[in-house]
Length: 281
Image 1 (cartoon, rainbow, N blue to C red):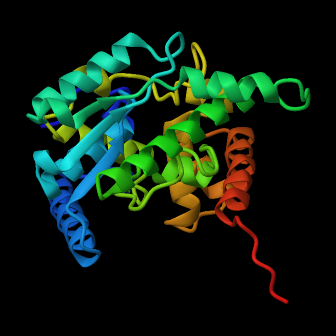
Image 2: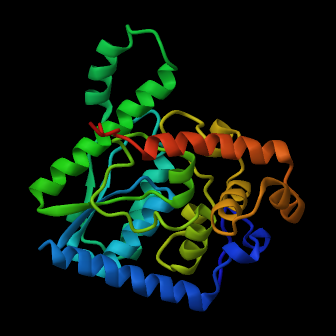
């Protein structure tokens, strides 16, 4: 049933593991909920920002299964020179596997608008320029998706998973922005399990290391200094199993310093997910 993925699915602990029956149940419920949401608000079409990564692939497949291939638009927004060509090809393969109409695979490069903004902003020297420009890229993509949603009378389908949300590993009002989030209630390793089951997702996407692709060689795990599998175990044990740090360390054989680092990083997620702050008086 399960295909090879970036994560060794055998190492995933029981409380994060999804059986074939559970995956079928999750897929059925998500497809039904997406369909009902669109119907409730009078929409038939969806736009999905697809990067060649796994999260966007799963969200894209769910949208197609819920709404039909003719009603879903995959939007590639490369920054040429940084966006890997393999990612563009992987998205083409995904679209082909889903039998998506050619006109529903849209490509809009973002080099010119990002460079134009960065030319004016880079004179302000504070902050990591790599991250600042990467945030500009993420927000430029958001602008494109929401303009297309208006032009096509569509809803923007998000691609954020629970792990990234909890860790705050997203750009505020960039890749975080959407009209509906199909996989935000699933931990990263659970999204991979779902993806492994979905035959439409190419193997190249399944085995790829997670990365936002905002600069050359970017790796999500290296940037945060956090292993995604360990993050899933720690955060789910803390939130879902109500375990203490000592209990987590003992049961899952994770060093306490790593647990503290993950929980410290999760504070960023708490701050980001609480914005904007609304005055009480």
